[in-house]
Length: 256
Image (cartoon, rainbow, N blue to C red; front, side):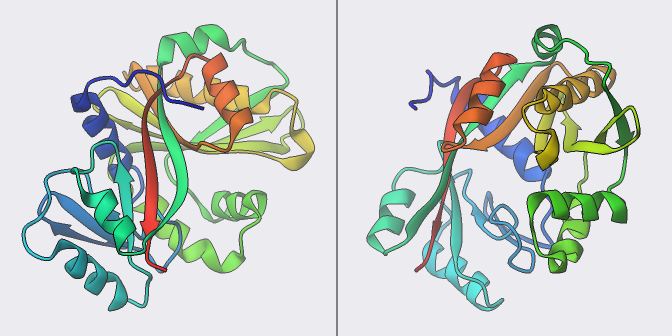
């Protein structure tokens, strides 16, 4: 799938910054405009060099590699349409492997609400913090190892902007899905959209998006953003259906 005509680079850079703020690493070190992030090796987003902004001076690749190797992590770079020219080709020449190509998609809060009718089979439950139960359900639904819980507790707990951790439940109070929203500067980032395996193909994902859009409206936001891997065609189709369009591309480059 090819991305649509991108918005101006100013919007791309803004959404990239919002996304970086919405996923808090355990260690973050400024390197010029770049950010070096590390969180026990859990998730690429929290363990990669964010390369949005001018190229740092000096041996940028060597300095980034030193940061990660000192922590026992494979050097990894987050690459986007706002990454300086030449970085991707330099990493490719150095043998860095591309991983997890995806898209940023953006949409309108109002349009998402208009395109998703309320379904009274389900009810949203919002919480400002991800408690142990929310994290345990998140790990279980994702199929992750329980040992990841401390890393996610840090990532979710350290998010600076306004956030909500959504549970969608049925009439009996049973969990049918989870999602996270992070509000900043008139935008809400949508992430961790997960549907319980036995509730798939029942419209749960659309109701999670509607619930986050309703929360965004209450927070005074008018725009939504999210990230999705390009191979997840069913999710992309759903996001398009509720009004999202592709803004830009991203991927990771990791040392072999």
